[in-house]
Length: 113
Length: 109
View 1 (cartoon, rainbow over the protein chains, first blue to last red):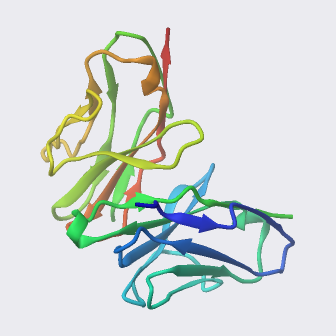
View 2 (cartoon, rainbow over the protein chains, first blue to last red):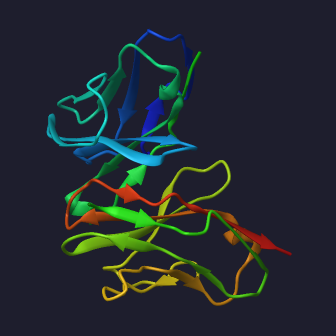
């Protein structure tokens, strides 16, 4: 079974631009969540989607948004990028039938210049 | 408020020595507790969770509700245990993890 896959793996954006990151969960997993990892703040929960609905949201500004498609694939978007948005963005998926274990992707490295 | 504290950012021990990575949490209710590990150039992966009460790669962790702790232990460290370790909690059945800041464990030969 393929793991959680994220694209792109690396990207560089300019302040003020927007970015879209994609995530394909493990086949059969309907819950997808996103995390931001930075050296200063560590791993922080962004949001979680289940059956195309946002089920949980972390404490991030509205510039951070996400969505989930009917095939459980998910995207997250960050608008009006700031230097502080430079981070590793991790996607994770889980399934109740698989014991709710949360599996992580390798992440998308975003650098804002 | 939900919070996970890992007091040691860095921990260095010799091969064969016992290892204990500390984790304390703050949560009103009955959380689920986890240890995740990230080896060099690999993705974050689940090491163990308190409800399964397993021993994985020789590691164990016991949930102490009185002390609100979930320390990770291994009696004899191996060089391949060198990695970043994260303690995390979630509400029962929820898919939102709250992570500690992590402890970088280095096993010296």
